[in-house]
Each structure stands twice: as C-alpha cells, then as structure tokens.
Length: 225
Image (tube, rainbow, N blue to C red; front, side):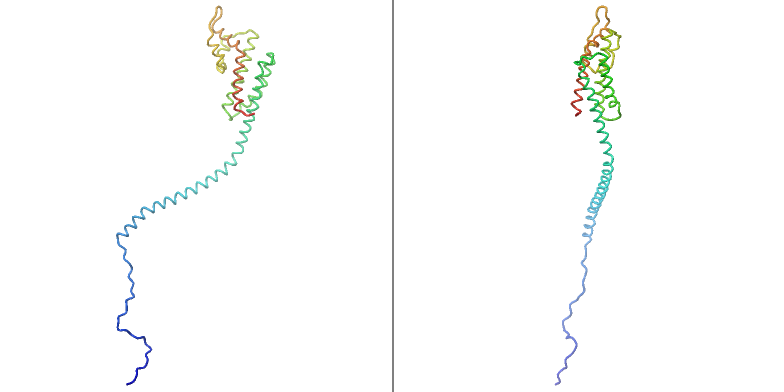
C-alpha cells in the first residue's frame, strides 16, 4: 500500500468553525429618553455659565479702561482740592487775626482797616466756585459778624440809632446770645420798643465779636494749618 504524499493544504476539521460576526449592542428607548432629559437640564446650565464668563471678561476689560481713564482725570481734581485747602487756610488765618480785635485797643478806623484786609483774604475763597461749601458758609458767617459788629460800633460812636437797622439785620441770627437780648427788650418810658431793640444790639458789640470768634474756632478744628 502506497503512502500518501504530504499535502500543502491546511488540515480540515470536521467541527464547524466559530462565527466571527459581531453584533452592535442595542440601546433601549428608555435610555435614550434619559439621556435627552439630562441634556435638557445640563445644556442650559452650561450656556448660562459660559455667558457669565463672557460677561465677567467684558466687565473686567471695561474696568481696566475706566481705571486708565480715571487715573488721567484724578490728577487735576486732586490739584483743585489742594488749591481749595490752601485757600481755606489763607482765609482762616485772616479770620484768626481778627480774634485779637477785642483786646487790641484799636480805634474804629484801625478796626475798619483790619476788616478790609480780612475781606481781601477771605472773600476770594468764599466766593470761588465749588470746594467745601459748609466751610465757606461758616467763614462768610464769621466775617459777616465782624462787619456787623463794626457797623454797630460806628453807630455807638456817632450815637445814631436808626429804627430797625440792626434789630432786623439777618446777620443778627448768627449770634443767638445777642438775638435773645434783642427779643427780650421791652419798651421804656419815652423809648419805643423798636429803638430799645436797636440799642440792645449796639450795647452787645463784644458779644458779636465773641460769636464770630467761636465760629472761627470751629473752623480751625476742621481745617489743618
């Protein structure tokens, strides 16, 4: 019996070959609905976060632009504020010089010269635009009281009493002590109440000086020299 010659073909097997076919997994409709529901919740949140980030970036850029512009604007504002403080100091020193009037032994002529010199220092500041309005108002009040006291002093020297000239002057309300003395004045024999009120103002010139000095001291407590 002749032996079979070797074969160049692969040996065959009587067992069936395993199938190599792959099947894609099936996704249930329930799972798809869950994913869609999750997207409807998450997507708006992501969009909101992205929008917030964009807004913050825009605001940051705007802040940087504003800061650069403000830096260039503040310098002249600070210069104006410095000039305002310098003017306030000059005016305050002029008012403080008037505090020595009651004890200086001045004549009326010398007093008027002192008032004129103080006005030349105070009014340029108090009449300027802007600045510390409350300070300016208080300085006008103090200077007004010194001028009012001078007018009353002049009337006392000349013995000229005009009915209603002093008792109705608005500056009288800047000095409550003298205003009280005027309001409490009563008519006397041969003297009308109006004239008595005038005399009450003229007799209280030192009190007018004291009211002016008190206002100046209040200013000095708020304005560093």
